[in-house]
Length: 198
Figure 1 (cartoon, rainbow, N blue to C red):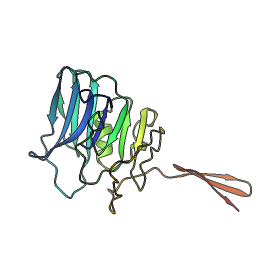
Figure 2 (cartoon, one colour; figure 1 turned 30 degrees about the vertical axis):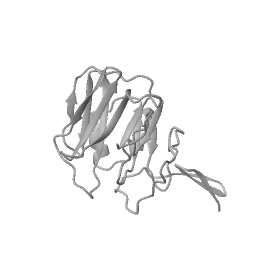
Figure 3 (cartoon, rainbow, N blue to C red; figure 1 turned 180 degrees about the vertical axis):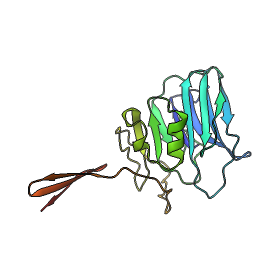
């Protein structure tokens, strides 16, 4: 499992992004108490290569799965997961946690609205989630030596002692904002202010 948003108390209600290992495709699985549906990308991924993946749930009958800059695959099965109260990265975080990911994950993000194909393409081309609809960006986990959320305060709790990879995908990040005051200069960065006395 790459990422899941779902009800931590049951194993039936969730939005899940993972892989179809036999077909080497990105898979979106959506499930509720009445059942579930899988949709797989038509384009495959390669092992030992950074791959961009995204899923978008627009309505209970409209969802897409993306890989790199390929066109999305759509599904219209009527599924409405209930009780979402947990974000999990690298495992299924429901009442029976499992399916731990064996590999690297970076720059995981969640928005409170559906992104357009153009916005997804920007992410696939290497732009940071901080550039894409920042007003509706709920959580952003670069996973650079920490599991902290950079925007929403939804910090993660690590299980099974994950390690930080030595390689990271190239991502275009916003430039820091510089402010100048008489006698003092300040740099506003994602981590907060850094002050330097002139």
